[in-house]
Every structure is written in structure tokens, then in C-alpha cells.
Image (cartoon, rainbow, N blue to C red; front, side, top):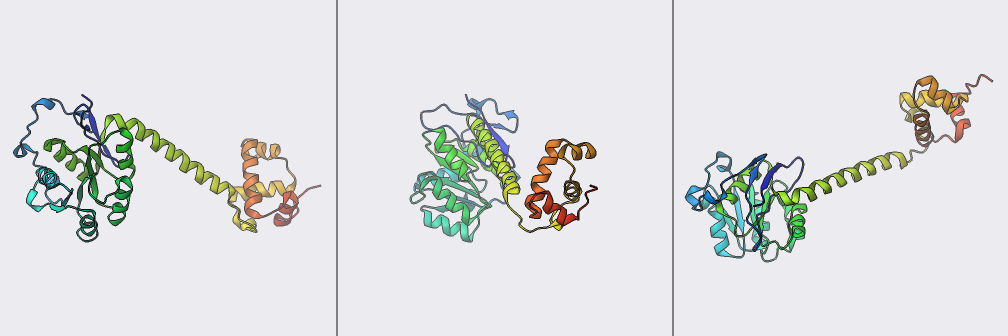
Length: 277
């Protein structure tokens, strides 16, 4: 049995997927706790956990199948209060007007258009927690919905007990994610953070600030610029300021770019000729 975990959305904005048809059933772990005794879980709707976190939740259940809508509504604390949608147009109207807290979304909803359609729906309501239910054929398909903004991906035949727990998890600001997907998501997150950091660093180093003059420099850069203008070598400046020569070189590159000075002669004009000759 493959366990699932719920994870804070501050790290990964995705949710656990329950098993697809023909794949092993999954147990669930919330935070670091594995939920044991899956065989003993009650199947009746009356046995669903009654948590205060779901009391004020407005839930929209969207599926082209009336039977699926009726079944999934039983996982909601107050089923009669849950709204229904049988097509993408009704979902769009509800997200624009009613702003539900949770959307139980059938991946096969007519007109949805897969993960791209989910991304479009998320533009209508950034706060709605989307739980996608479908017969996912692969991890790649589940991950695509996760990237599109799903907080959970569950099999259409998920038990009502687990669906209720998934709803509770997303309302707490967590995601409900299958353990088998966490490795891929963490790898993608790390790659995204690295790429973002590299892009920021590259932009800071490559964006020119022509004609900025001495006023564009920081206090440290002005200190180094004055020494460069005086004719001190990078090695001498590094020794004087107790920093590495590589650091001096990096500062010098930024100084020339930001100030607009051309060479040390240009710096001498900005800072006055301080050479002692």
C-alpha cells in the first residue's frame, strides 16, 4: 500500500492523488502521520469526520455525471449546501460570482480541456481550492493538473472518508499529495528556485545603467572606485580592504557598468585625479 501525505502549500502547491482504476489503493498520511488500518475505515457517509474546518466552506461540485455529483456531495459536511455544475459555463459563472472555497472538479467535465482549462479557471478565482477527480492514466497527467493549480488529484472512485479528509486538508491550507509524486515535485521546485535565482543574478549583472555617475554607486563601490581612480591595482585594493582580489574585480565590473565610466581614466574624471604620481 502506497501512502499519501498532506503538505503545507508554502512549499508545494499540489494535492495528493488517489489511485487510478487498476492501480493499488492508497492510504493517507497527514503531515508526518500515516493513517493505519485502511481496511477498517467506515465506508458509510454517516461515518465521515465532522470537523469545524468544513463548517463554513462553500463547495461547488462540478461533473457532467449526476451520479458523481451526488456521490461526491456526500463528502461535504452539509451536502445540501453544496452547489452543483454540469458544465464548464456554470463553473465559470460560479467562480466569478459566488467564489466557492472548494471546487470538486471532474477532470472529464465537458468543456474543461484538461490542465490548460484548469489554469484558465484559476484566473477567475485565485483563492478557490481545486480538487480534481479523474481516472488518471499516469503520474505525468496528475502532475500536469498539479502545475495548473490543483490542490489535490483524486481517483473518481475515492472513498468518501478520504475525500472528506482531502477537503479538510486543503481548507487548512495544505495540499494532498501522493508520496510517489513528491520526489518529482521537489525536484521541479528546486530547479525552479535555482533558475529564478540565476535569472535575477544575471539581470542584476547585465542590465546597464548608462551615465549613472558616482551617485549610482553604493558606499563600498565608491570607496573601491576612488582607489581604482587613484591607480591602485586590484591586488593592492584587496590587501588594503581585507577582501579577495576576485571580489575587487566583481566590484570593478559593477562600478564601470553603473557609473558609465570608461576605464580608470573615466573614474579619475568622476572622482578627481587622486594619483600621487
